Amino acid sequence: QVQLVESGGGLVQAGGSLRLSCVASLRLFSHYDVGWYRQAPGKQRELVARIFSGGGTYYVDSVKGRFAISRENAKNMVYLEMNSLKPEDTAVYYCNVRSSLVYWGQGTQVTVSS
View 1 (cartoon, rainbow, N blue to C red):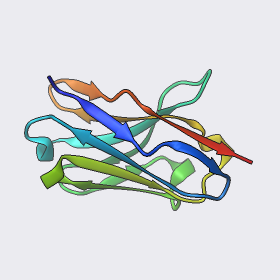
View 2: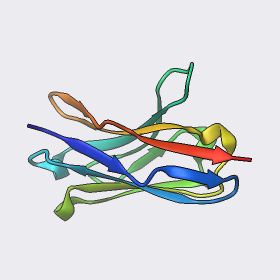
View 3: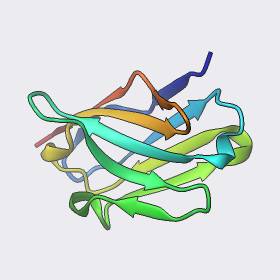
View 4: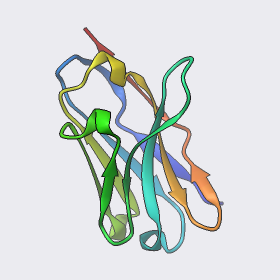
């Protein structure tokens, strides 16, 4: 019954911006930390950003200063604003919620052209 749905991906030119959204049906959403992961063809899935229930954030070094994660608990939403996009950011982006169980969305494709 728990479902996470990502949206906002697309094709963008290098240097452009996108904002990804994820909505979760999970009860007590505000209690849990939420992450954005990405996976490019032939590469392992990696953690891009995480926002904790208390509001703290984490970013992988490669996106620091370019990406920003935020959440609206009243809407069960989490966002990832991506700026100054590079071709190496091309991947399928997934949102993730970790509780006693781990939940994943289906992913949204981000393609950055040069």
